[in-house]
Structures are given as structure tokens and as C-alpha cells.
Image 1 (cartoon, rainbow, N blue to C red):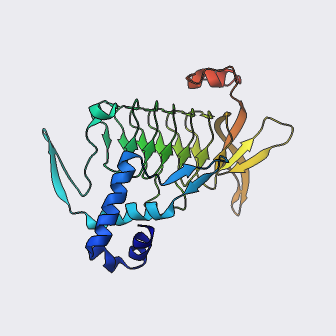
Image 2 (image 1 turned 60 degrees about the vertical axis):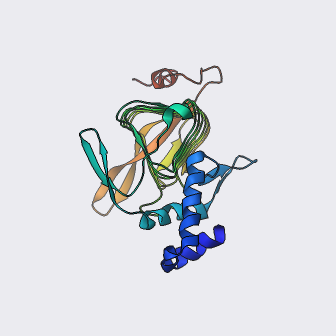
Image 3 (image 1 turned 45 degrees about the vertical axis):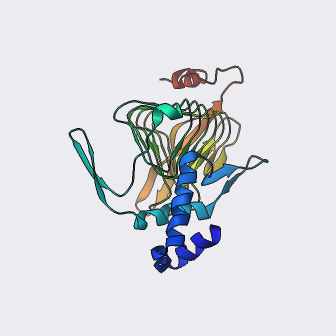
Length: 269
């Protein structure tokens, strides 16, 4: 299937062929069931991106036809089917939460009114809270809490090299935005309104000298919004960054609230 997808990626005329369309449909089915992933952890803890699978997700759109979907008094017009069979899958879904077919959602996940896009992977025990969005192909680990209004970016538009990855046990605070392939390490805590892009400086200020990270939040870090001075032709202005102010204590319950994690580091909440 890899060779079929790569060929179609370089020559879209091949999307007219049955073999190509069947291969794409098969890959989306495997994603929906969790047997394939756009990205997956390796034995050494690093993540491997399966670029060909992401390409298959993108190629799935042009082979689908627009159709009208009616749900009670609501009407939608789209190309993509929605995920179904939540009871059999052991997933709690609170109206009007929506996830697209082709997104894997593990048993014991709770979806408050939220949205999970195609290609995403949401592992067991995770809470996707009210109005949170999980973008296309994003990878969400076990026992993660995505708080209200969190925005986890996708990789389809524009095409990014890697998906956003939120590792096991992380707590993402209200209205946080994580995009452009940023990885949040295991059991990290992001305070409310933290914005992480591929170019955001993530500065560890717990030592005598600052330590900068780009695109990665280390495990068990406690992170809050910050800013730093940057010189422009018109003068010096404040530019947003993220500040690592401490580490989550080993004694802290993995289900701790964001407020508790921040109070440990004497941050007002």
C-alpha cells in the first residue's frame, strides 16, 4: 500500500483507479480501528511519523463525494462520514460531540461536546472536554485531560511534517493551543492560555540560567504563559513564550487538577 499511496501522491490521475481508491479506503479503516497510526512511539521513546499514512488521509478527501447528512432538525453537507457504534466501543459521548470516521478513539475515552478529526488517535482514559478540538492526525496519549476550549492542531491544512503529540498523563489547561507538530511530554502540565507553535520559545526558568526548548515540552514540566523582549525596527516589544516554572512532583496524583499543580509552584490561580 505504501507504493500505491506514494505513486498517487505524485500523480493524482491515479486516484481514478480502483486499486488506488481501495488502498486509501483500507488505510482509513485501519486508522479508524487503531491498527494503523500516523505516528507511533518507538522503543527508545522517540516518535516515528508514518508519512505515507498522512498522505493517504489527504488523498481520501478528493475521492469522497459531498452528501447531505440529516440528524433530527440539523442538516450538514460534507464529504466525510461520522464515527458510529460508540456503545460497542466503550466510549462516552456527550451531545453534540462529533468525531469523524477514520479517527481512533479508545475504550473509556470521554468526549464532552467537542470535535475529533480524521486520522487522530485518542488513547484510553482521556477526557476531551467541552469545545476542545483534536486536529487531523493528532496523537493523544492515555489519561490525558484536554480542558475546555483547548485547540490541538492538525496536519492537513497546511501539510506539516509531524502531527501534534500529547503524551500519556499530560494535563492541558483551558484555552491552550498546541499546533505545528509540537510534542508535550508525559505528565506535563500546561497552564491556561499557553500557546505552543513550532517557533515558540519554551524557556526553563527553574535554574540559574534559562534553558530554551523549541517544539518540545519535557516530561512532568509545569508550564505557564510568558513573554520576552524582542527588538524590532520600531522598538522593543514583548513577544509571547512559554515558561517552565517547575516539575510535577512524583508524589502528585496523575489525575491532579491544574490548579493543584500550579499551587505547588506558588502560581496564582
